[in-house]
Length: 295
Image (cartoon, rainbow, N blue to C red; front, side, top):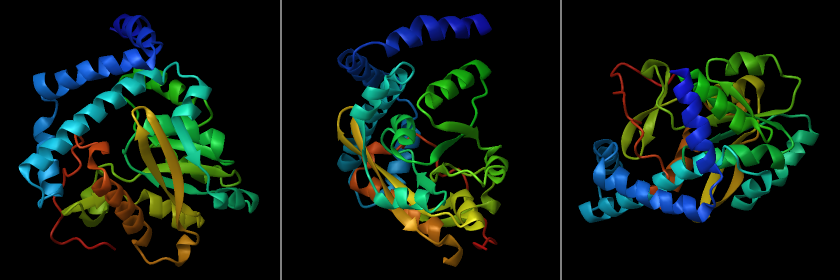
C-alpha cells in the first residue's frame, strides 16, 4: 500500500501542482461539475447546514449560495494542490497581508499573541504566508491525518515558509514548554469539539453550537492578546488577510467573552459572503445537553 501512496503523490499530485493556475482553474471547473452535479458531494449536509443557518432565505437564494460554495470548494481543493510546490513569491502575490501595527508593538513588548479564525476562504494559503509577515513564530494547530505518508507530506509543505505545525494533542504541552519564546499559535474556532460537555455553547448561525474553548483557555492562562484573522477573497485565487484585535488583556475579560467575540466575528463574515465558508463540514454534530451551563 505504501508504494501506491508514493506513486500517487509523486506521479500525480506533484506534477499537477506545477501546472499554471489557468490550467488548474480549468481542472477546478471540471471538478465543480463532478462534485455538484455528478456525485453531489455531501450535498445533504450542505443543504441542511444552509437551511438551518439562513431560515429566512428562499430556496432560490440558498441554491445560489450552494452553487457558489461548490465553485469555491473546487478552487480551494485545486489551490491546495499548488501548495505542494508553490513559491514564496507566489504565496505573497496571492495572499496579501494588511498590516496591524499592534502586532509589532506586542513583539517589542515581549508578548506572544493568539490568532483565531475559521475555515473561511483560503486558510491553507494563509498558513504559508503568515510567518513571513508577523514577527512572532507562527504555530499552526492541526489534526494529524491517519495516513502517515500524507500527514508527513502535508506537514512539510505547510511548514516550508516558516510556520510550525503542532497537532491538537500536543499543542497545550508545547506552549507550556516555550513560554520564553514569542509565538503566535493559530486556533480554528469552527471545528466541532469532540466532547460537547467540555465545550462552550452559544448561538451561531441560528443554532445552538458547541465551540472549543482552547483559544480563550490559553489566552487567559498566559494573558496573551487575541486577534481574529479575517481572510477576504479579492478575486479568483487572490486574497488578503488582516488581524483584528479582540482582547488586549484576556485575564480581565468575563468568562466566555473572547469565545463569543471571535465566533461572532466569523459569523458576520459568513453572513456577508456565505459561499466562502466550509458548508460541507458536519459542524453541528452535537445536541446541547439540557443540564449544561457555560461554566
